[in-house]
Length: 198
Ligand code: ITT
Image 1 (cartoon, helix red, strand yellow):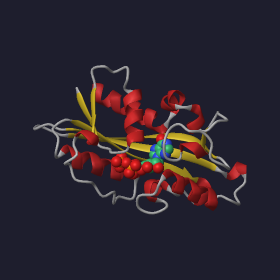
Image 2 (cartoon, protein in one colour):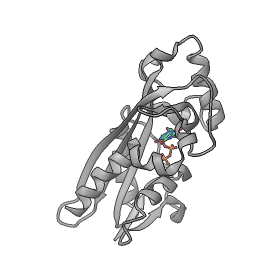
Image 3 (cartoon, rainbow, N blue to C red):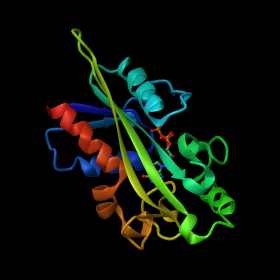
Image 4 (cartoon, rainbow, N blue to C red):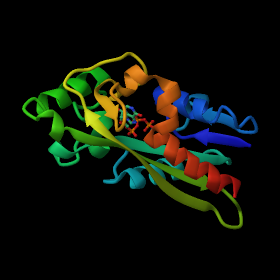
């Protein structure tokens, strides 16, 4: 079965591939394989809205099962920011370093006990059909805390400043094997695979 990941984010693509590693019947493709598909503006105000928009737009160009991920970090002390703006929190084309610097600066005066946060991942699924196209959306959440300083080299985005609940190391220290068992993305993808296979 061909499964198109409607994303250009190489960190997400690597995680999807690893999580799906034991599903040898799934032939994973991403937007890197379809460079002519135009970029999509993430104009919706929720993760679910943006995920549906990305999956629907991409499925208009490719007649295959398509999933799109819209995700980000919600920090309680910042009233849920950066949220849906996670990729652009320090301006368009922000680097991970700039994103992390901005978050740590805004949390400068926030004590450890108040640094609670969560990663949220919405994944939208489109299964095209001439009879009735299926569109579904699910969400996975991973609770945790934002650290005082960045630590670790693995992963992408905000991984060096996020410690998942029940651990002392950041996602960037824990590495992909642990992250891909407990992450927001792993939980959402698990639900999506159940829908695809049911
Ligand atoms: P696509 O739209 O092409 O999928 P994107 O990077 O623009 O790529 P999003 O709009 O969903 O994707 O932005 C998500 C951002 O949230 C991402 O760029 C990271 O900064 C952050 N993020 C999401 N999941 C993360 C994770 O598992 N670890 C660290 N940071 C994450």
